[in-house]
Image (cartoon, rainbow, N blue to C red):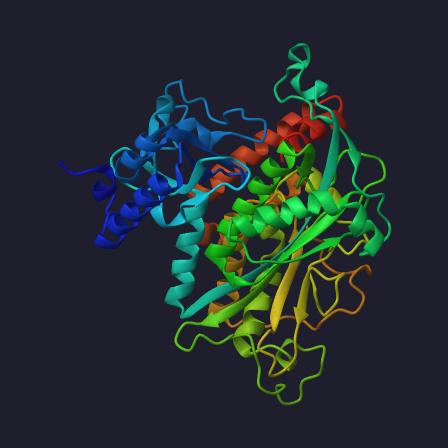
Length: 492
């Protein structure tokens, strides 16, 4: 009898060899438990923890999971009435909370540095009949990358992620059974540094203990951490990683975000990737996504221009970027409004878009201008030439964030679009504005024909319904700050 991996068309001789290597590693290192984790719509890891022996079987047979885990909003409420007739008609395979199967990638096996004798495997959901689940966000990015590959390109991305770390002073509010709620409260916290002293060495020294945990956790997980920095806001820090291919970078973001949160919690700290934690004097956190096209035939950065285009000035994209890079930039601009909600997917995140705050407000680009939505970095002949999208928040699902860049950029490439001239006044009046609320962002995505065609109507409808339920609950909440404290600060 064939096992499930074979029925999915996944199992090859190379995969079988990888399964055998995992078995040897588990036995040699005394692993007792293995976590089977997958990334949900909100970028959070979910999954099951199996005994070592059960994990070895699940490498080939998979492990079941309730399908409604893919239908949850940020409060873990199911956005479809799966137990009512026709309630999940638009989602074949999900009615009645039917089972899905998690299939692990054996080459993703790692040991968790903050837990003894515990391994971890990255998984993706499959239907019980052996067909892939198209709504799986990692598969959404894989599909986008396949489209990009057909055009002759790959995507290289670099992560630059701001977040906040707090020291826990009392777990009572979060763990008191008398205060249990759906969702519950976060712990009581204090800051690890007072802020407003950007990249000050004294603030780095004050924050050394939690930042060492971040460093050791990231490196033990094999992540290419480049630097840790003190950001401007109170208790705010930043992590920067070496650039790599988009799928690997997205996997790294999921592992980093979830890993450091767990490792810090065990040491008495609360890490949050919420854009604006619920305190009066705070600075927003952004996730700046650096990106460049890769020519699949040569492996070279396809955004590099050897010499400025004839007659161009620094304000022209083709002064710095190749023709392909300029088309890509124009596509990002053309679909900036539609992609915003995929890059900043929470009610809280839209509060970041304020003037003169190193956060964008308008659909424009600039030459090395951190107030612009899209910042072009580099020069002719510079192999590191790239485009930085500054619209994202650190709570975004990385697979959807990166897929949005691909579908927008590809439209620019395919139509040969060229951008308007660079802006030197990114906060001036007159330019088209990016969406200013979650509701406006949802509507902009639904109205973007090219993004809907790229992602597919089913994916867009699925994502928008989940986000609309989150928005509706926020609208109905009497205390908006308490909503965000429970919904985001306690969980993201």
